[in-house]
Image (cartoon, rainbow, N blue to C red):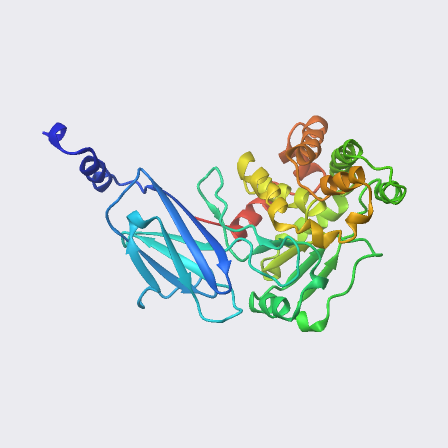
Amino acid sequence: MLKYVPLSLLLIFLYACSASQPEIEVVCEEIGDFEYLIKWELFPKITTGTVKIYRSTHPDNFDTTAEPLAECPVSDQALRIKTGRNLERACFLVRFFDKYDVITAARTPKMGNVQNFRDIGGYRNSSQKYIRWGMIYRSGQLNTADESGIKRLNAMGVRTLIDFRNPETFRMPPQTWHLDNIINLPISLPGETALCQKIKDNELRRGDAVIFMQDMNVGLSEKAQNAYRSMFNQLIVEDNYPVVISSNLGKDDVGLAVALIMEALEMPEEVILGDYLLSNSCINKRTVYSNCDKYPVHVQEAITTLLSADERYLSCGIDNIIRTYGSVAKYLETELGVTPEKRSKLRQILLRN
């Protein structure tokens, strides 16, 4: 009898008779001041039913007994949301068919002059668990934040700052940030002094920059263990959250640190790499190196390379770890002290179904 049923109805029938949840992907983008675009995809594709959207300022606290902020057919696949002029973080619960809930937020909330600020929540691991939103942020230096950025940081309730900058560039945040813990774990980037001299002498070329970035990530895997070990010790203390992990640009030392956190949380390789490469769209290179135009073209190209994230850079650090220790898991345990007990605690704090 089913052979006479139209294919679209057959898919709906099969979905209704199945006890398993469809695969749902939801993305939230901040497209303007207090305006968001929420997009979704389902597999198998379902064209009937409704989507309800609820808003909260905290990703773990939604009132779904109240009227939804918005409602539309699931077939729309996207919805624009305008919120009131409120600096508190906008988090959304997207409810499909009054049955399946997905929590989302803008990954890169606007922080007023802060480079590369973003949330690592929402990523899904191999066990189909998600990193909780609003728990760990990664960022460039926060000292550049304007008044609105500081207010938004306070509204997020950030309690702990882990900063990898060296003593020459680290600045103690003002009391207006209301941080409970300020932890400076200096990481000196290998070869940085010689690199700066090459730029001044107009000698740096793109090939030199690529080699420097690859060597630097190898160096980070070998020489930043103390800082990364201390970072993990802070991350297993639940009262420390929410946490911001920061450095000058939040790209290289922070990039490897976040990759190691994601490895400990069993994130797939493509998720780890995808988050790492987001720095390319979250760093305004013109703002970072405003006087770049005074250098010859070949030096400008080299500087652009230094300010970019490339799969080869991170791979050099990770591959060096695997060659030396056999696996990233072994490196985490033997060099960074992330024992099975600590890993279990980290997952308990950061992951949700």
